[in-house]
Image (cartoon, rainbow, N blue to C red; front, top):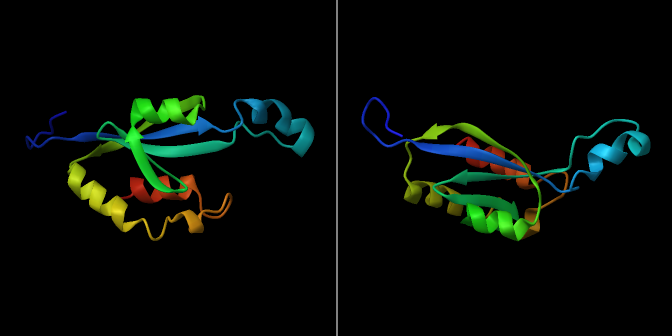
Length: 122
């Protein structure tokens, strides 16, 4: 995509996977008393790669990540476009590795959703 200034613009996507494989939507109301559409795992897709946080920050090609997660892709949402370079994005991701270390992961308080939020705001 070209912007009016003639610089390349790269799309940035939020990828949303359902960890429950649809089960949360079916059983949450009777079990919990409220409806959950899904149990979400999220990642950022940019430059043909998918960046995620679990056992630390990792990335692979989008196709390979989808294959490895073995989770149903619920949504792929275009967040916008960026003019940053792949090298600059990788520098930023590398700088996040201390904050998003394997030891810092917590299912509820510090997870993939916190990582994708931080990455998307860059």
